[in-house]
Image (cartoon, rainbow, N blue to C red; front, side, top):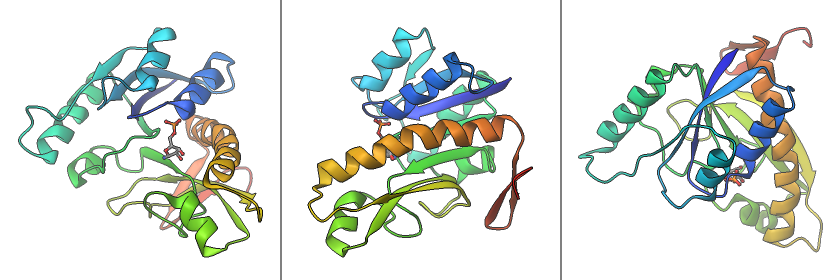
Length: 203
Ligand code: GRF
């Protein structure tokens, strides 16, 4: 069974969708630990309700980002984590962290990468005038939002969309896509060749 560690900072709807998929046995995995850098994150409460170990690690007392990330690696390895899942984690990981889990860190981004990396991307998609945005699950590499793409789901941008309405429709897709990607990983079906991720038995 795949041992997962999930990093969060906020409301935790993606975390909840992963918890639900595991509890419904749609993914053969166990969440060993949820780590939050924010003590008051709703995600912390969600994990607690499901009896998942939670570690709150704020950046207080750490001399550098590297020192902070070294602590995270120590905690994750201590729980035997094999796959790190970023679910609304609002810090950029240092190269040291990424080297500790090569092609074993996933992120979900609320746009169709490589369009609109970074923050506030639903607003950027509306302002740019694209007809489609969506979400992307990708492996995390040292450059932000550029790692090999695992799955994507398109979402049309409607002419009367607000940031809120578009974000909501994208989130609906995120909540399906992330558990699907983790499921594929847990079944050993993802093969990374260069920038491309092949899904075994499908391609
Ligand atoms: C999601 O929109 C996700 O794509 C982005 O951060 C948000 C997290 O939301 N990376 P939640 O904490 O899972 O509700």
